Length: 365
Image 1: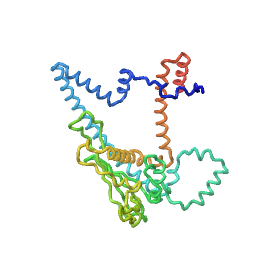
Image 2 (image 1 turned 90 degrees about the vertical axis):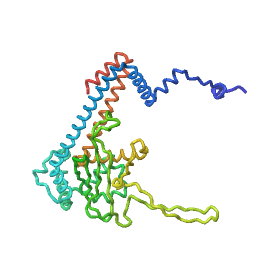
Image 3 (image 1 turned 90 degrees about the horizontal axis):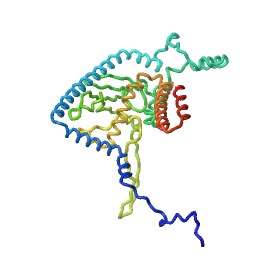
Image 4 (image 1 turned 45 degrees about the vertical axis):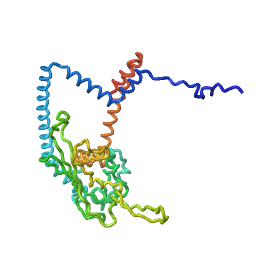
């Protein structure tokens, strides 16, 4: 029987694997960033080692100047933090008034409610009459219902933490406040809750400690203030209401006797309220921190910073979604820039027509 020519190449004997050349192997190895960095560092060390002694001496003088510059940067960042604390106190009365409106303890007057709205401008007269009738039916609505819960749902970094069993509790969240600490540098987030069936606390806190000092063993990696520690609080849960733990039951069989028993075990449950029980940073050096713990701490610090810098000052925009749209627009612009760079790189080998198309894109922007 004649062999099928299309399947002739399926035989392993017909397949010849091409060996990589030394140059190709070297190229693959050099594509790893760590390898490149190590080689570059080694080359720099060799270059400096071969410099004349007088030049090495002058380099040390330059490093002393650089260290003085780094200390000035630290002083600058400290003053910026102090200025932020000063202006936070000026913002506080505005945040208090927002809290009163949200929770229905203050009804804004007509002059305070004048703000252009595209939705209202587009309504027909019939719809406007319908809205007025609905408004009469909703006169008993207090404040802005589910204000903070809606924000948590809208913001991805927070919504990823919130589970379905958290939402009934977050309905009772009244306000989030910031306490700015100058010395020692840091800040405290305060979450205010109305009386509820889940816990007896009215305020849950998360405290962040910051430092703004160059490391003695590596001063030139200083990039400004950093959060290095956070402290949560104890939540006094009502019996059977703790959403941060769950009970699991496992059946165990005795190896020799064959007796089966049921073991009950309490384990941690996914919940936003684990935010108030952060992992403890070990006292040892940074190198001794495990990657999982480092990632947890980094994520916790990012969330705390985001709540402080974005959510508290601009809460209404995250409720309406406008704040989220602005961030998405910014990310899209960054993506567009990346696309342009890629097009430019490809365009180096394009013909004149391709160049004209790129010029047209630039004009449109």
